[in-house]
Image 1: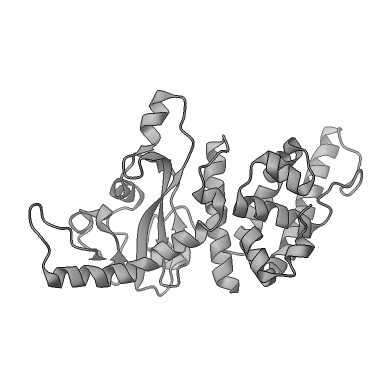
Image 2: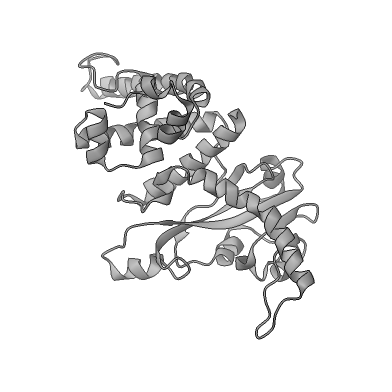
Length: 307
């Protein structure tokens, strides 16, 4: 059986199995335990009111995940390594159905803890005030789209909807916004893989949202932003003209821009250290697909905050 106590002895092993260092993990355990206890008492009170609960939290048979430490390690291990429930149950000496129930139970707890730590990215930006609240004193924003593979649906309409011509696979797509510190401050709701990055951008952000004082660093997928958002300051690699070549000066400029833009790629890569966001997504619930991306971004922000 895999245990947290063994992995906590090695930072390398901890990062490989839970995605956090031992210090970051230990700082998270207390908050996770408090939230777990709180949720237990809420369920108890609801059960008492319904008349189908007598035993207080903590009573009854003790499961294999005995402590808050083991429970936090269990859910982080699932996010980082993304095994099937059969393998997860084998590693933690649980039945596959029990492993599934524990994932369903502990995932919302982890989300609440990260929310209270103020590391989860925001999902909406509707005004300039909200933008400055989310990114105070920022001068540069790095924006990009990211796709995550999903299983091919048996429904032909869903197949067409989710098929990404760019990735040649069925995917779900998000737009992310980061700052120069690689913190993911914004994560859009997921869209079907066929959606274009710039099409999503226009639907998400109203004109006038980005002032001249903030430079937007974008890639070539956002062609047209300078025309549609004339008030924004945009830095984007120049696209090669049809039938022509870029000049040496333009190529050098593109290289400089790409060197700055790599920060958003590093941020996305940080979230995708958790294999649940980079492997082909096997879980059946669409809303869970969104939650795991949100939590993975939150864990990356938490790592940056505590690192």
